[in-house]
Image 1 (spheres, rainbow, N blue to C red):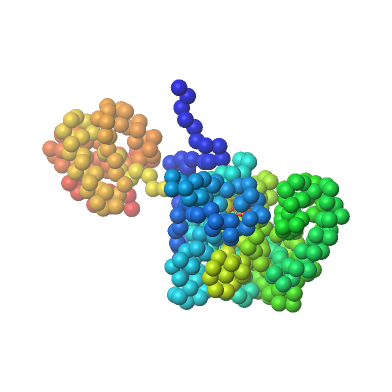
Image 2 (image 1 turned 45 degrees about the vertical axis):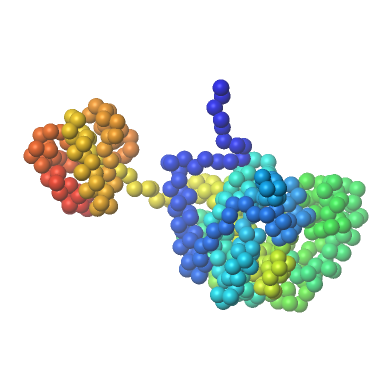
Length: 421
Ligand code: ATP
Ligand code: MG
């Protein structure tokens, strides 16, 4: 019988690779904390309605990409396709806003989307996300962009272009939507089936359509920034001023609209050319109406989602540094039955003192033990037999230099610290 393989579009993290994710996650939370963001965790599944109402019924995510199923109690459940909806639910359910505004939260989560798997596009992927609830001013927009920028810099990532745009508020959206409709109406016959429907329900979604024909028609569509009301215009200008003052390079890309319905005013992406077609590593923006739309009060908010797998692709392409996980400090190689039993004491003593220690659990030959010690990259090896145990003495061998230092077995941890420092 053929063995079972992982599901298409999912990725295993091998033991030899996990330190990369650990390093990225640790750095993410450290940088987030510098800006006052605290980690939160939400369940991997939620009621389907949460995503329908927040992400939007007419988006690709809700229409095509969600992993939705009925549970045994007949409820419609969906695996989280993105992080903002759950964060808003948590904010409201636990009345986080009572702890003062703005509330700044960060998360590291898996997301699930039924998309065509390819490089940088998975069905299970991971995001570092942040949300800032209760900040209206463009200072907040600049601050979350600065957080992402600092995170990338701390990891040593280069050549990421920050692109920003403003898609306005519901007020400016009215005039913009009718201009858009007019533009697409005249090319209606060429639009794909989905976009036909979008023309009535949500013409802005056509701008995000992946079909080449729709993309071509969208090219000379009216631009959101030409329809901004005074308030949105000023907000966008202020954001640019703040970014310039912070020394963060950006370009205005008027074609960014983002794939979710809840965005207002600022939208932005960090884009790379080094990882192929799926070059957007981080995407985010402002969503002033979402909390209210989800049953809360008016709490203007914003955030971003950053794809961990795409970030790793980018860091690997740029040969970025990943700290190596600690190797085995001391490997105890045993000769004879008794020494295996005695070694339990020695490794315990080492581990109690924070020194990574191992010995052979399978009672193999000395030769096989030495081979294994080499394989796991042990820094030091001490060989223990009946003689060594009887005389409380041994030699700690530096595996890199071959140098051997006599030691007292009963003081192995202290001896190691002296020699290895
Ligand atoms: P795209 O245009 O690439 O489909 P998106 O607009 O759907 O991206 P968001 O919903 O904003 O993406 O998600 C934020 C980030 O999460 C993206 O910038 C990307 O880095 C990552 N991401 C999104 N979808 C996937 C996926 N299917 N596989 C891997 N990473 C993803
Ligand atoms: Mg997408």
